[in-house]
Image (cartoon, rainbow, N blue to C red; front, top):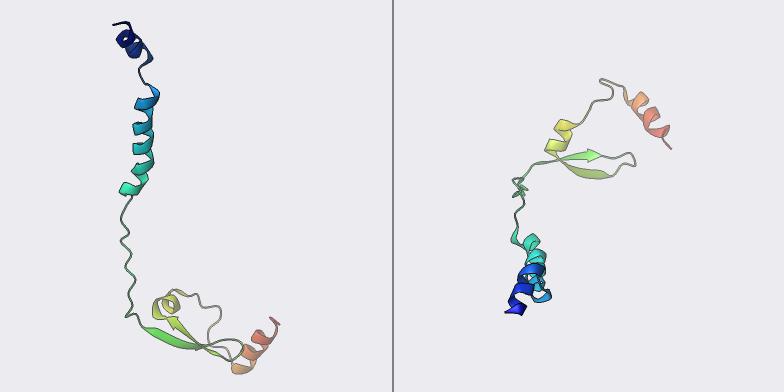
Length: 87
């Protein structure tokens, strides 16, 4: 009788704590996070562009549409000068 009254005073023993600890470690594996709604579309269109060194690069169409225009209607000569000044 005396043991049961001590157990009530302590509340949680070592044997009672281990299952709580184990279940707490398993909670991240249950996946309560938000599901990802972003779908990677493999059939997306690509544009072929030239890099500074003259090599061709395939770039997604959406990246080209979201890009910012630095200068419009520039001549080839000024473009070459602009590319060379970065070196």
